[in-house]
Length: 190
Length: 233
Image: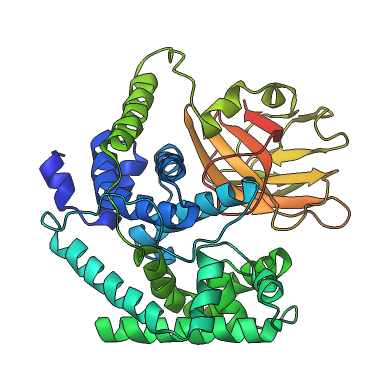
C-alpha cells in the first residue's frame, strides 16, 4: 500500500498492518497519535525529557509487541493513551518523589500544536477535548481533584483518601459523580 | 465489593481510572469477563476515561523524537530482513532483556511440541499425544518449577514454587519469536505458590515463552527479570 492509501485508512484498519511490521503503517500511526501521547506523558511526568522517554518507549512497545489492539477496549487512541499513561505512572513511581501535576502553570513553555494542519477528525477531537477540559474545570473542586489524582497521579482511591484525610466512601463517591458529569458533557458534545 | 457479587459502580469507576487497590483490581478483572452488565458499564466508561487522556493541553513532540523512534523501527525491519540478524545497537528497555544474564540462567522448561493439548498427563482438546518436559531449578527464584503443555491453538503453563506478589504486582507471560515479544496472560499465584495460566496462540518451533514479575498488569514490554523461560523445540 502507498503512504497515501495508508493515510486514508481508519485507525482500526491501520493497526493490523502495524502488527505485520509495516514501517510506513507505523509511521502513519506515529504521526496520528504521537502528539496526544507526548502531551499526556508530559502532563503526568512534568518534564520534556521524561515525556520523550515515555512516549518513545510506549510507542516502540506497540511496534515491537505486534500492536495487539483489541477493538473491544475502545478506540486506537484510547488504547494508545492507556499504554502511555501506564508507562508514565511507572516512571513516576520509580522516581524518588511522586508529584501529581495538578497545576499547569509554571511549567516550561512548550510549542503548542499548530491547528492549521489538522484533519477534520483531529479538529473534532480537539474541540471535544476543549469542551471536556472546560467541563473538568467546572467540576466541583473536590471531584476534579480526586479524578486528577487518580488518572494523572496514579494514586489509588485509598491513597487519595489518606492524602486528603477523607473517608474512602467519600472519595469513591466524588470520583463517580465527577466521571458521570464528564460522561454527560461528552453526550452533549456528540 | 463482596467476592462473587457484582462490584458496585463506585468500584467500576475507580477501576476504569486505575484507582483500585491491587486485590480489588484483580477481583474486578476476574469478575468482568463473565458479566455482561459490568462489561457494559466499563465499556460505557471508556470514552470518558479516554477523553481525560486527550483533554490535556496538546503539545508538539520534538522532531528528534520522531527521528529516534523511526530509526529504531527501520533498524528492526533491517534486522528482521537480514539472515542471520546482525547485532543491532544497544537498545533501551525490553530489547536489552535478551542480553541479560538472568535470561540465560533462568529456569528452562524444554518442551517438545507434538500437537494436541495436554495438561498434567490428561489428554484434551485436539486429541494429540503428549509433551516431553524437563525442569531445572532456577537460581533467581529457587524452587520454582513447572511444565508447559503445548497445544494446537493454546498452551498451558502449570507452575509451582512461585513467591507471593505484593501490591499491584503480577507475573506476566511473554511470547517471543525472533525480534518480536508480545504479552500474553498474567496471573498471581495461589497461597501455595501455584498457578496455571493459558498462553494463547499457536506456539511454533523456536518460540520462547518467558515469565517475569511486573509492577502491574497491562505492560506491553517486560521490565522485570526473567524468572523462567521455555523454548518450543
